[in-house]
Length: 348
Image (cartoon, rainbow, N blue to C red; front, side):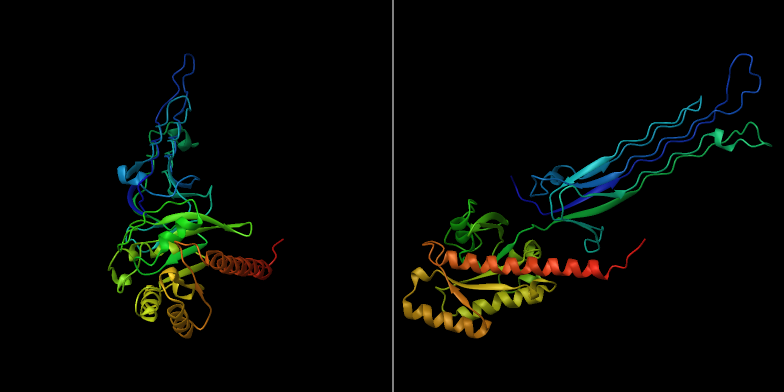
């Protein structure tokens, strides 16, 4: 299945049906009076989060979604049928944006969430509603309200616990393939990964989801390379796994490039906890490993792990560090929810 994380759709809710102008025409009833029914309500346009989807590829082949109009009212006080809703089924983590592509209307993060993004028009009143003591035979009815027509963007941000970041060819896809059943494309040239990949990894009977995105290069936040298109997919992660290629000359510069891009991108990415790993140590001599690790620890101010994704050396240690960060993040979220509940005033 092809991956698509951004789609533009055109939607229109249904218009309400017109009210009916009608009078009773029955034998032996001389003054039957009005009996025009109301028009039916127009259908809504609804966005629903469903399970089993991880791409917006369906919206590449269909961009226009129109709900049904309501049926007009009929005589004998019969109301028109309401129009059918139309449902846009999207994966978990989809953001709904205005036509400008920046204003967020909703962030859909739970399966089963439903949001009406365009309400159908109300049906018009039939002439039965306008009968009064002084106007026994009204000859007018209300037209139905028009539907809402608008353009919106759907933007998918994958929901994962860990986000893999690093320069192209840093070994991110190799790590994902070594620790999960995911089978991303792996090769010895930059930008092998062109779309995000998800994998479920486990350590010490705990499972979590890892997202691998295309490698970042300097200037990615301004649109250079491929990574800038996918940075949004790691915004929701609890922790970032920063892989530094140990075979390059200046590991400190490589580390600074990624950190600089995360900070330039802004938002929550710059503040996310990071686990820094010196990767591809199987291709280094022990003295080189020690020197490069010390250099990275000097700039990060924390622990730098050693790992070889190909040989699977140090992988378990890295995964345990990730598990600890994920646990700490979930504890903070739970604490914040409890604090919010305590601060909410009680209402009888």
